[in-house]
Image (cartoon, rainbow, N blue to C red; front, side, top):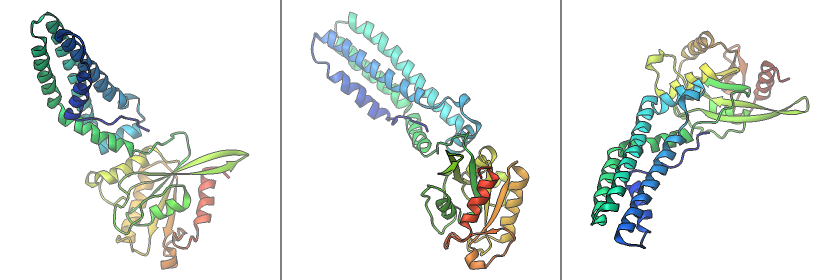
Length: 311
């Protein structure tokens, strides 16, 4: 969703700008110095401006994405770093413009060039931490799923290790990481399925939310908070998965408490599903499924379609 170019650090930016200036080899010392200064100015102005413009306009973002960015990156830190980069761009332009005028009048234009290179380098090193932060932010944003707010959306929720990833793989096109330790899912995982509805192709989004624990919101970690944000803004339907075998490492009571919290807090219909029914034989009144044998998955798919009024 977010197409942001690789953010170079200060050394890489200087190498890029000075490297382009180095290619200017013809003319008098004065014209070469002026040409090099103009090349450095243009390179840094264009590159730094591109960085700032590439990040999304936060005011126009859907509230889901604003909240998700605040959780995973930090909105205030992001704005501060973008502001620092734009400050550096303007500062480099000011330094370069003054140096170009001075070089045109100076007897030793090469000395002006060297001094200006030093001043420009100092400015970029001042914002190097911000450049590094923005590159890390870019990498995080690349992992953000591109969610269509107009497409019917089903969220799979529940405690860690109850089988959300396995069920997502059976229900959609997603290829989630599946492992036997808590919080395998570090963020939101998106999958799709296409269905034929009255001779038209319709798409359904399935989103696996990271595992949640039954505890106050202020005690939840950033991984859990991503799941809460998804539940707040995205679902047309929630499939809540319970592991009554307790192989997940959590009590059934805790899981049911979380189910009730979701039902109470979010205005969305919930289908409760008992996974690993091949082990328990069925310990609740919920729809029984087994991601290992596939039992009950077809019935769950039908119920999802009915709830979304797609059948």
